[in-house]
Image (cartoon, rainbow, N blue to C red; front, side):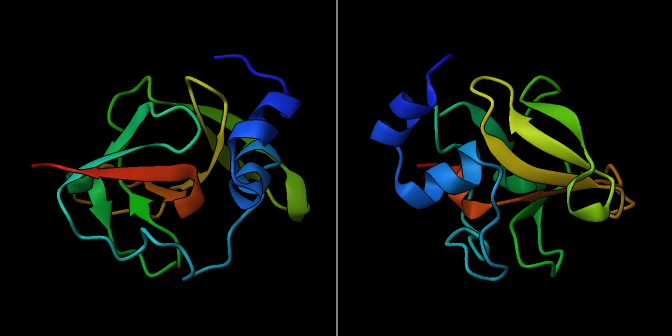
Length: 129
């Protein structure tokens, strides 16, 4: 899915644009989906691509929604991020390139050992009926 920055600005809320298209971060503990415990699917707030299932969500205490795996291996893309004086792995939506957050190696060891730390503004949630 290819859109210009101007096209994204026309369809996205300014704060969603800042986080997802300019690689911003929402304040910790501020996101609407942080404490969401409903069963359903988390999709990209920009393009609605399926990213995470609720059964992979866990409370990491970091201040952002955390998941131990994406829906499929092809849901997200990984990019080296050396901004802010540190080395991290950025995750983006494979479908539209929206910045989602970062993945870290400190997730549940009985699962994947990974923590996908995601901005709520990068996500939409659809509850299972």
